[in-house]
Length: 252
Image (cartoon, rainbow, N blue to C red; front, side, top):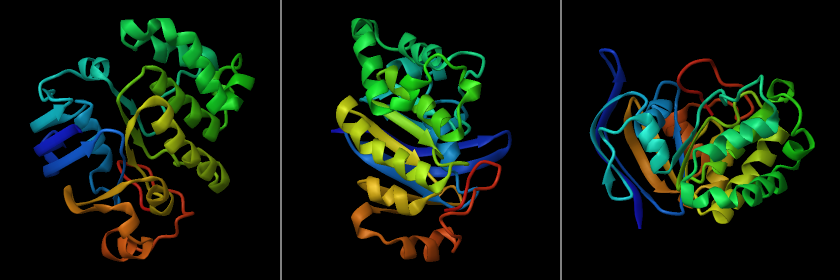
């Protein structure tokens, strides 16, 4: 079943257009890696789906046209967004941040909140250990786990994750990526993962979509692509361990 269907989507900032006619569909239950060079449009595409940037074209989510919806209405419909930079509330404790995510869930699922919080703690044990600490005291990797956990607790069907490895140590990144398939299975998620680490993305994804200059340059099964093909054709030759630059996008 197709959960998300984009047709001729354009998006931009002011007079600058960053996406030029995107056609993309996501099957329910899939993990899709969204790859591309700096400025290719990955972050803008996630923002377009969340209705957080000026957008034209058709966006169908679960068969409903969300092209004119507000960001809040799209979120209530079941689209979770973990933005670049995490966006946790530093003055609140870890558990208070997680409970904020539960406030956004459908009323029919409110009764499952306590059990779902335990499930997140089981997935990310460090969050349970630090549940009474302020979010400001977390490391970068712990803060990323918190941001993902909070988004999942809203019980979305589609989860958009923007550069989860940004600023993280390599081992922390590997451990984090190991959780994406588990989250997909346990929470019945469809995941669109915009990420600068192409190698790790391909290891967890079913499909890879490569953006180049605001358009889709490649859309293939992840197991049919190699990191070398991606780097040489679209992403340059940067080392995977290099830290991304500030700005809209980052290079793998």
